[in-house]
Image (tube, rainbow, N blue to C red):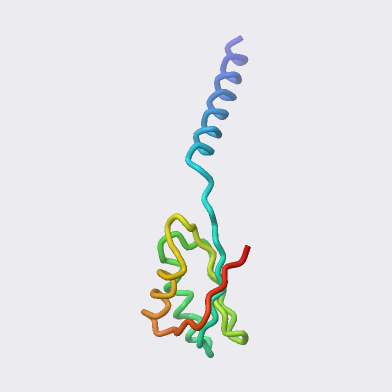
Length: 101
Protein backbone atom coordinates (compact mmCIF):
# COMPACT_ATOMS: atom_id res chain seq x y z
CA UNK A 1 0.00 0.00 0.00
CA UNK A 2 2.84 2.39 0.83
CA UNK A 3 4.48 1.67 -2.53
CA UNK A 4 1.24 2.42 -4.36
CA UNK A 5 0.81 5.72 -2.51
CA UNK A 6 4.43 6.63 -3.23
CA UNK A 7 4.01 5.89 -6.96
CA UNK A 8 0.79 7.95 -7.11
CA UNK A 9 2.44 10.84 -5.27
CA UNK A 10 5.43 10.75 -7.65
CA UNK A 11 3.11 10.74 -10.68
CA UNK A 12 1.13 13.66 -9.28
CA UNK A 13 4.31 15.60 -8.56
CA UNK A 14 5.65 14.91 -12.06
CA UNK A 15 2.41 16.10 -13.63
CA UNK A 16 2.54 19.29 -11.61
CA UNK A 17 6.08 19.99 -12.73
CA UNK A 18 5.07 19.50 -16.38
CA UNK A 19 2.16 21.92 -16.08
CA UNK A 20 4.31 24.47 -14.26
CA UNK A 21 6.90 24.33 -17.06
CA UNK A 22 4.21 24.90 -19.71
CA UNK A 23 2.76 27.79 -17.72
CA UNK A 24 6.00 29.75 -18.15
CA UNK A 25 5.42 29.81 -21.88
CA UNK A 26 7.44 28.24 -24.60
CA UNK A 27 10.69 29.95 -25.46
CA UNK A 28 10.77 31.19 -29.03
CA UNK A 29 14.08 30.27 -30.59
CA UNK A 30 14.93 32.36 -33.65
CA UNK A 31 17.64 31.52 -36.17
CA UNK A 32 19.24 34.38 -38.12
CA UNK A 33 21.84 34.16 -40.87
CA UNK A 34 24.19 37.15 -40.98
CA UNK A 35 26.13 37.91 -44.17
CA UNK A 36 29.48 39.33 -43.07
CA UNK A 37 33.01 40.20 -44.18
CA UNK A 38 34.78 37.26 -42.47
CA UNK A 39 37.48 35.71 -44.63
CA UNK A 40 39.81 33.71 -42.44
CA UNK A 41 39.86 31.16 -39.62
CA UNK A 42 40.99 33.87 -37.20
CA UNK A 43 37.78 35.82 -37.83
CA UNK A 44 35.79 32.64 -37.30
CA UNK A 45 37.56 32.02 -34.01
CA UNK A 46 36.81 35.57 -32.81
CA UNK A 47 33.12 35.02 -33.50
CA UNK A 48 33.05 31.59 -31.83
CA UNK A 49 34.84 32.96 -28.76
CA UNK A 50 32.44 35.89 -28.33
CA UNK A 51 28.92 35.43 -29.69
CA UNK A 52 28.00 32.22 -27.79
CA UNK A 53 28.30 34.22 -24.58
CA UNK A 54 25.75 36.84 -25.63
CA UNK A 55 22.50 36.68 -23.69
CA UNK A 56 20.06 34.02 -24.97
CA UNK A 57 22.33 32.57 -27.66
CA UNK A 58 21.80 28.82 -28.11
CA UNK A 59 23.98 27.98 -31.13
CA UNK A 60 26.49 29.67 -33.45
CA UNK A 61 27.82 28.35 -36.77
CA UNK A 62 30.40 30.14 -38.88
CA UNK A 63 30.91 29.36 -42.57
CA UNK A 64 34.03 31.14 -43.86
CA UNK A 65 33.69 30.22 -47.58
CA UNK A 66 30.15 31.67 -47.79
CA UNK A 67 30.97 34.44 -45.28
CA UNK A 68 27.89 33.69 -43.16
CA UNK A 69 27.26 33.38 -39.44
CA UNK A 70 24.16 31.47 -38.30
CA UNK A 71 22.96 32.28 -34.78
CA UNK A 72 20.08 30.61 -32.93
CA UNK A 73 18.86 32.54 -29.90
CA UNK A 74 15.96 33.00 -27.49
CA UNK A 75 13.91 35.89 -28.88
CA UNK A 76 12.78 36.93 -25.40
CA UNK A 77 16.39 37.59 -24.37
CA UNK A 78 18.05 38.97 -27.49
CA UNK A 79 17.43 40.34 -30.99
CA UNK A 80 19.13 40.82 -34.36
CA UNK A 81 20.20 44.41 -33.65
CA UNK A 82 21.92 43.44 -30.43
CA UNK A 83 23.77 40.61 -32.18
CA UNK A 84 24.81 42.95 -35.01
CA UNK A 85 26.23 45.32 -32.42
CA UNK A 86 28.12 42.46 -30.75
CA UNK A 87 29.59 41.45 -34.12
CA UNK A 88 30.56 45.05 -34.89
CA UNK A 89 32.24 45.27 -31.47
CA UNK A 90 34.65 42.50 -32.53
CA UNK A 91 35.26 44.23 -35.89
CA UNK A 92 33.04 41.97 -38.02
CA UNK A 93 30.94 43.96 -40.49
CA UNK A 94 27.38 42.73 -41.03
CA UNK A 95 25.90 43.40 -44.48
CA UNK A 96 22.60 41.50 -44.22
CA UNK A 97 20.53 39.53 -41.70
CA UNK A 98 17.79 37.06 -42.63
CA UNK A 99 15.68 35.17 -40.14
CA UNK A 100 14.99 31.53 -40.91
CA UNK A 101 11.82 29.76 -39.94
